[in-house]
Amino acid sequence: MIASILLSVGFLSACGVVLAFLIVLAERKILNYGPCTIDINDGERRLTVQGGSSLLSNLAEQQIFIPSACGGRGSCAYCKLRILDGAGAIGPVEQPHLTPEDRKEGRRLSCQVKVRSDLKIEIPKHLFSVKRYLGRAARKRPLTYDIVELTIDLVEPREMEFVAGQYVQLESPEYKGRESVMRAYSISSVPSARNRIQLMVRLVPNGICTTWVFEHLKEGQSLHLSGPYGEFHLSDTDAPILFIAGGSGMAPIWSMLQDMEEKGIRRKATYFFGAVTQKDLFLVDELKAMEQRLDWFTFVPALSNEPPGSGWSGERGLITEVLARHVPDTSAHEAYLCGSPGMIDAAIAVLKKGGMPESRIFYDKFA
Amino acid sequence: MKQSPSEKSLRRNLGPSKFSAEGFLGADPRPVDEIVADDLRTLERSGLSLQDLLRALRRAYRAARDALGAPVEIRPGVVAVFYESRGRIPSPFRDGGTFEKGEAVVTDLGSGRKLVLTEVGLALIERHGFFQGRGSRYRIEPAEAAEILGLK
Image 1: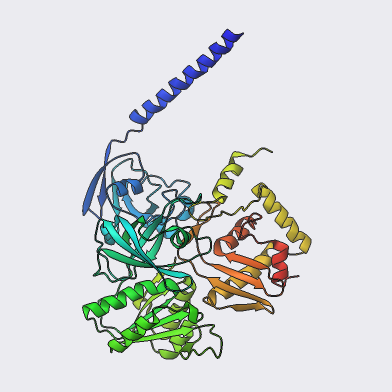
Image 2: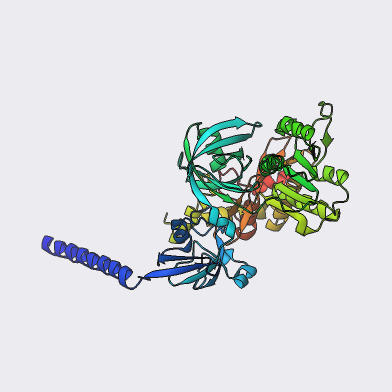
């Protein structure tokens, strides 16, 4: 009886070992795709990689960082790239994320596309300068009750070249059972300060990264981030500018204004900043001082729910209403918007009603 | 109680993740289809259709979103405030699409009861009849929501 049990266990174990061996062999022989070439932007760059893993991870290994928030699980759909040749069939994970336009244009989730043959792909040029950085939290300065300015000293690499308006992805490590995540934050500091960047982080209830910044990140602590990302930046025209922002949407606009001052760009600019009450306002003294200093700049803060009789003598109402009152004709301007999708949608409607063509409206939607 | 592989995988997707610190199930031990069935029965007993409730929830969400953070009256004694948040969140059912983050908190000033509405939460109700598990910050109790929004 015992001998037969031992014989059965031995036989099953041997079968398991043989199967495992066959799987390893199959992986090496059958699934060995060998070296594959990834042609980027019609010959602009050519990478030779070992086939078998995802396009996203292959690119990251070659220091080309495509935005991704889910870590390659195919759920955030941030990592879409245009693949002109060699992508293979669309998998079930990708299906729900691809619009008819994506399919027509050949856009795919780079985390789900396996490199199994030579590929021809397109990558927006600005992503070539994205790097992953080791930084150090130099300072956390409260700007309001729910927004902090986070200053980060760059350690390795020591400098970041970016354009005012771009953003980085800050990585929060695992804490209290929460997964490590990456979240986007616009850079609020001026591009000339290359070895130190500043972000404005608003506390989101239950937000994984913002809770880490507010409650766990200590000054002096190391952290990781990647960037710079994004194509939100000042255009090269002389058109008068309307800046419109709310909350932490202040960040890229503040960076742009400081950059304009440093570079001596004297385009007429009016900044409409929306908040709910006075306790939601910040950098007002700095912006008022800038208004005094620069004859081309006007700052218009507006409060949508400030109690009557509070002493507030500035503008009242939704920022979009204030904008419409101040600039009924927007046809000669350019607009730069940063804030919640609701604010951006409403502002675009007002700007278009005032005569601004959509091609002159640039925005960084929190989306 | 046995758990089918699909239920197991669904519960994993609905749990805490890179996108949701607390997940969508709260402390609810019931299988997902049981949560859905219980809530639909509650709606039936209230004489309300899912569509009626969803329409009212969406109206409240939209009104708050349009007010850009200022409190807005949904009906006498009920106000909503929108809290912005950067980024998008995918459906935990893996059925496509990503949704704006940000939440509308609807408060019944008389009783202090609150509804926390999100774009993804409303999509889960619309697509799957899933009002989230008990204990989730974002769970909508159908009967309570109907009362707060003045549907009964």
